[in-house]
Amino acid sequence: MASKEMYAWGAKASVIRDLFTYGQEQAAKIGAENVFDFSIGNPTVPAPACIKEAIEEIINTREAVAVHGYTAAAGDTAVRQGLADYMNAAYDADVNPENFYMTCGAAASLTITLKALVESADDEIIVIAPYFPEYTAFIENASADKVVVPPDLEHFQIPFADLEKAITPHTRAVIINSPNNPSGVVYSEETYKKLSTLLKEKSAAVGHAIYLIADEPYREIIYDGLPILYVPKYYENTIICYSYSKSLSLPGERIGYILVPPTAADSKEVYTAVCGAGRIMGFVCAPHLFQDVVLKCLGKTSDISVYDENRKLIYTGLKELGYNCVYPSGAFYLFVKSPEPDAAAFSNKAKALNLLIVPADSFGCPGYVRVSYCVNPEMIKRSLPAFAKLIEQYKQPL
Ligand code: PLP
Image (tube, rainbow, N blue to C red; front, side):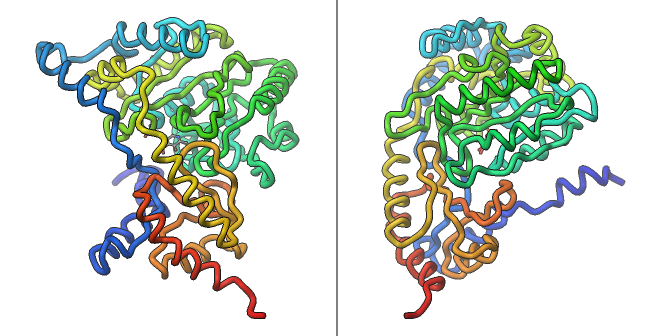
C-alpha cells in the first residue's frame, strides 16, 4: 500500500526527462555528435575557480567535524551575515542576517515559502504562464489551489488585465520568475512598478497582504547590459527564493536561500513560519560545506558570456531560418512558436531529426517549444541544418 496521490506524482512522466533519456539512448546508437539535445536546463559552463578554491581551503584548514556538522536550521550565522552585507552593498537592500533562511536550492526555497504562507485549503497561488512546471507540485504540497494567468503572447511580460481578474479574496501569493524559464524574458522596471500598484490596490481591497514570491535562480544570467532589479524595492511584500544552481553552476550541491525582507508584511511571523515549514518537511539545514563555499564566492558567477554567445548563435540561426522566436534577454532558454498549433506534434517531427526540443504545454503555454541553449556551441552550429529541414516541412511548395 502507498499513498495514491504520491504514487501518481512518482509515476507521472516528465516530457523533459523523457526527451533527455531518449537523447542518451539515441547517442549510444548513432553517435553523440548526431543528436542535438536542447531538452534540459543543466548548466554547461563550469563553476568558477573560486568554488574549487573555497572547497579546498575549507577542507584543508578546518576540522572535519566543523566542516561537516549541522548548522543552525536557518543556516550558519556568518553566512547569513555575509549574505546580508552583500545584498546591502550590491542592491541597497537594507536587510539583516535574520532575514535569510538557507535552503537546498530554489525548489526547497519555493516549497518552504509556499508551505509557510498558505493558511487554508481555500488559499490560491497565482502563477503566470509560461511557468516552471514544478510549481504545480510545490503548490499542491502546500495544499493550495494553483490559478494560472494566461501568457502575454506579444511581450511575455505580465498580462495585467488577466492578473487583475485572477486575484480574489483567497489569493495568498503570486509567483513570478524573471529571468524566465522558459521564455527567456526579463521583466522590465515598468512591469514591476505596475505589478506593485496592482498588488497594493488588491491587498487593500481583499484586506490582507498579497505576497509576491520572486523565484530568482537566473537572477545574474542577464544580457545586453540589462540591470538586475531588487524586487522588494518595488513591492515591499516580496519574498525572494534564490538558488546558486544556475548562477554558480552548482545544481547538484543543492544550495540557495529564502529572503524575507524586514519591510514585508508580518516579516517576523512569515520568517518564523518559514523556519517551521523547513522543519516540518525535514530539511534540517542546508548543506554546510556549500553554505561556507557560497559565502566565499559572493558576487561571483560562472562565465555568463558563454551562454550569451550561444544565445546569439541560436537566436540568429533560427530567425534566419524563418522561426518565430521570443527575444531572450536572460536565463538560457529560447522560446519558439511552433509552426503548427500542436507543439507536441512539432516536437515529434523535430525528434525524428534528432533535435530534442520541449513542447511548452506543461509550462502553461501550448503552441510553443523551449530550446535550452546551455549546450556546447559546436552542437548549436551542427544542429542548424536539422532545424532547416524541420521548418522546410512547413513551407508550402510554390
Ligand atoms: N525555478 C525555476 C524557474 C527553475 O528553472 C528551476 C530549475 O530549473 C528551479 C526553480 C529549481 O532550481 P533548483 O535546482 O535550485 O532547485
